[in-house]
Image (cartoon, rainbow, N blue to C red):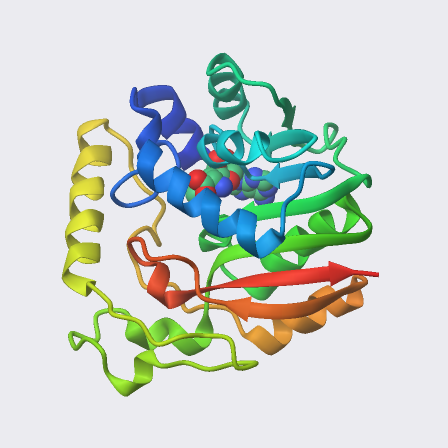
Length: 253
Ligand SMILES: C[S@@+](CC[C@H](N)C(=O)[O-])C[C@H]1O[C@@H](n2cnc3c(N)ncnc32)[C@H](O)[C@@H]1O
């Protein structure tokens, strides 16, 4: 099964919105709220912003952010997910992305893409995504490409040891040492796998595997080629598996 069909199947068969993001352990309202707070700070959201959440899922995080900006738009490539998001009722626009439907060009002062890149198998998948984000952002705007599997941090998965020196990763001086709970992450992944099996969904072949991660220099260059300048790479806030990922904050001139 492809990742696109996986999310579509989850949205069709899983009744609980918390699990439709495909995030091990689900996305409770409490977790969505904590993630949204972290994103709002990193993106420096303000009440004059037009925000696009590209690959929003059912919009749990977008809804949290919508109250802080002038206008919020959620966009996702799955029709079923967009339908569910719309039904959840809140003051934001919804866009179904697709070959003939991508009215997300220009005009957004802040653009977010969060927890989308786990489905990209190589850097060219990231490139296409970065091009779409770069097309959507207004001159002077900011893009946050968040919770991105990171090549340098991959080794922290199942290291079995907490607080080791490898966990202290510094790039551009912004990453911080942090405590990890690797056993918790593995439990979350195992129970999520059981849940999708019970729904009769065959997950994508790479589901649950360690993602090899993306090279920061390559991602940085891809943004530069599309007019963006990576201002900072930071640690996503603490939730399952996030310790192997980074957030890119990118400014456009
Ligand atoms: C893992 S979920 C993340 C949802 C949300 N951003 C969050 O953090 O909870 C990934 C979402 O991206 C959507 N998606 C997958 N490939 C995409 C693409 N190429 N462009 C836009 N959305 C995509 C899927 O339909 C799914 O809803």
